[in-house]
Length: 193
Image 1: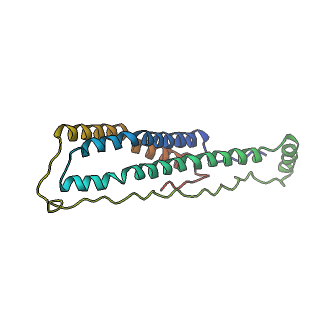
Image 2: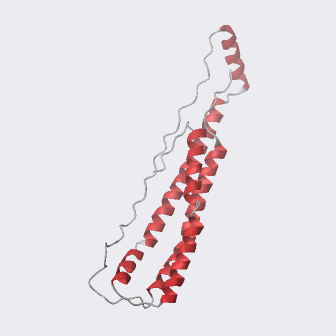
């Protein structure tokens, strides 16, 4: 009697864990830089657009933290899935005496086909809720005067654009890792929100 083929690939699951944890780390590393860039922009920035921008930037650190936490939850689930797979695999690989007895039973016609062990129940990862942003249509407020230091606004925006650019491949990497997991690891499905 042979051991059942469990449709799970530990390497694929490890890749999902590593991809999600690396994205969480990248988000955490950017939090301070994003706050500093927002402070640079806000220096001497006055008027209705400054008010809207300042309101919106107060939510960014919390949103980054929530996203990074959700990424780490997926990594944690991958660790649990790998552990469950290793346990199921070990349970399926019986000792030599049991295998010999099974081989005799198979030969006589009383053996059972190998069964895939039940999959672990892994919780889903909720999509993190981020704060709503104030995005007024048309003119932002009744004030007419807008002022700021153009070079600081430009520097802050360039910093934020660079930070965004550093993350632009992450969504595709996350999607690719999850697609590979869905194909290679159907034994322990995961809902990553």
